Amino acid sequence: MSEPGAETLEARIRRLEDLESIRQLKYRYCNLCDEDYPPDALAALFTDDAVWDGGVLGRAEGRAAIRRFFAACSKTVSFAVHHVINPLIEIDRDTATGLWLLWQPIVFTRGERAAWLAARYHDRYQRIDGDWRFAHVRVETRALSPYEDGFAKVRIGAFISERR
Image (cartoon, rainbow, N blue to C red; front, side, top):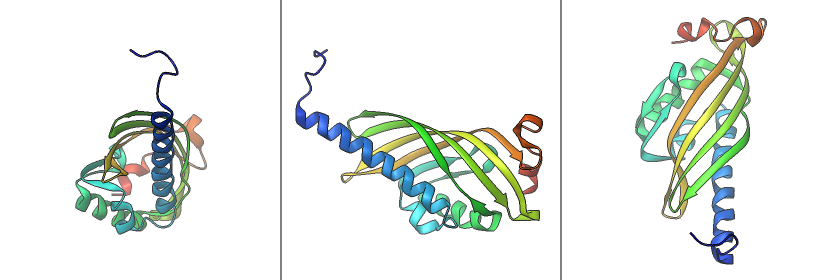
């Protein structure tokens, strides 16, 4: 193991650039989701064999399935604001992992039911042709609670099964 600070300036700059590129990838993803889930733009952020695993929210394997999943989202969700914070990103050459916290007000189209979503994103990234892409996104839902009741009274709302 090398001494602290023994990394070359070039390696340190590369790491900072990679961290920022991964953050920008996540921010693009969140902003697209909040702009009515455009399926082509969202699918382009993923590798060909990527997985999007939302647990109770659904699962899609492969870029084509991820595109179909997001095409259906705008029919299910009429409003969303993804707030992602506290990223922990680890880079190992052309792969990386990320843990993000998500706080999201959301409105489901069925009955225009508002809810609070609290979750953790567990991401894996792959550098392809110099650009970072999602290889795997897993959403660990901590709370999906009706707006009116909040997460103190209802941790995971029954309306999850109603939205499918």
